[in-house]
Length: 163
Image 1 (cartoon, helix red, strand yellow):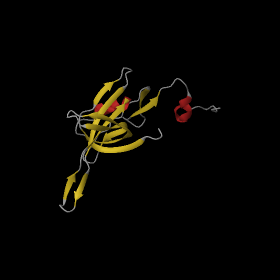
Image 2 (cartoon, helix red, strand yellow):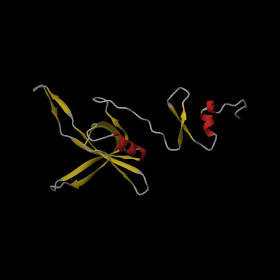
Image 3 (cartoon, rainbow, N blue to C red):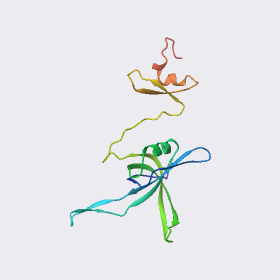
Image 4 (cartoon, rainbow, N blue to C red):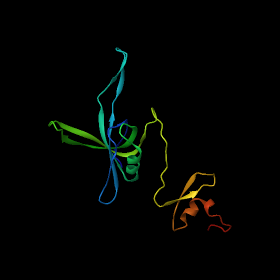
């Protein structure tokens, strides 16, 4: 939407993702990402850690389920999403605080210091079909209309004129 602030954060998950479901059955996952800036101090010739920024991130639907299945506490992640207005609250010691909140558009493990294996999930309303190139699976949309035949003419060969 217009006017929303989009940001990218690189940091570590503070906890395992928390997966919940709304009354309507929509999946929601919450994670806290901590990002600590690091700078090189030339006078002392060493790296200095800055103050950690904590961001509460929320994913919805399939992304939420994928986050809960794939990521764990301590995983370094790259998160892109829309920044929400901060919410004010009081800490247990009575200090006034505000939290940053991000609605996740994309999230994944950082490959800077780790490797990852990607498993593609089938979309709802699609069927898995044997691929002509070997053991790979190809995904096709199921549809009651023939509209998809026009999008990919090779799937419905015909000698007749299409119009």
